[in-house]
Amino acid sequence: MPTTRFQTTSCGKFFWGSALCLGLALPVVEAGAEEAGSKPAAPEIKSVIGALAMYRPEYLGGDDHELIGLPFIDLQYNQYFFNPINGAGVGMRPVEALTVGLGLGYAFGRDQDDADRLEGLGDIDGGAKVSFFADYKFEITDTSPVLDASYTLGLTVDHQFTGDDTGVSGDLGFSRNDRLGERFMIINGVKAFFGSDAFQDAWFGISERQTLRSGLPVYDSDDVFHSAGVSTRLLYFVTRELNLITAVSYQKLIGDAGESPVVESQDQMSYQLGFSYAL
Image (tube, rainbow, N blue to C red):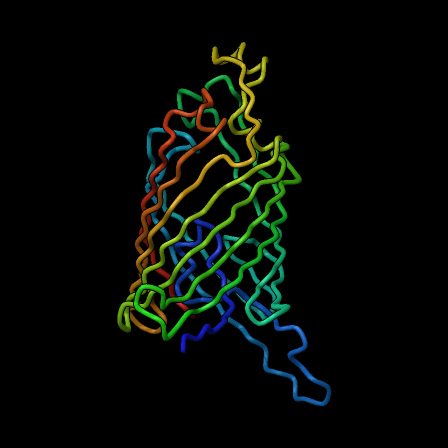
């Protein structure tokens, strides 16, 4: 008889998720784990370092690509964490299959010097942000090779509260993890990205003032969802501590965002190569 086994981990967002989905669970604490009179559990401490090289569009909607390299560090002490996905914060497991958390991090902006199309639009200043994330993971076994795998449903909501007002943004995602022998794992995922009116106006809209400086027409972007994407990531476990990752991601700008004069190309491809090492 088919069985469904539930687990709880998180692989975060497309941008940093490829680097950190190397078999590491986000820090969580299970509600009610310590019963009265039980011996306190030893502190759970994890530390991971790594680096990621990315070949990606110069800006969201850009046609030209850039190659960048980024180091990262992922730290965990019990339910507290620090990583590039959700910043510094706390994660909890209110029920067995669900992980929720809150983090304080940094939202990157956009420089008008990133591309000729952006000249005259001004910079979008980055700033501090608060992030809420929730992941629900389950595993289906004893059915067929078509269905047997682990799956993750994820939601992330970000709000930047310093710098420019870019409103609220986030993503909804679904991914499938398949083990290929003892040393390989492939992760296929889909995501839909959304934003508030302030977010859409900041990244895809053009005000009358910006029109005078840039020569581009006035434009309003009002749709809630601005893009959807797919990704494939291949993990290679060299040793128990060392992991290699290669990934390809595709994102399609849709609706008002896709038609914005700011956008040079609706099709956004990125390629990633990196490693992580558990200390």
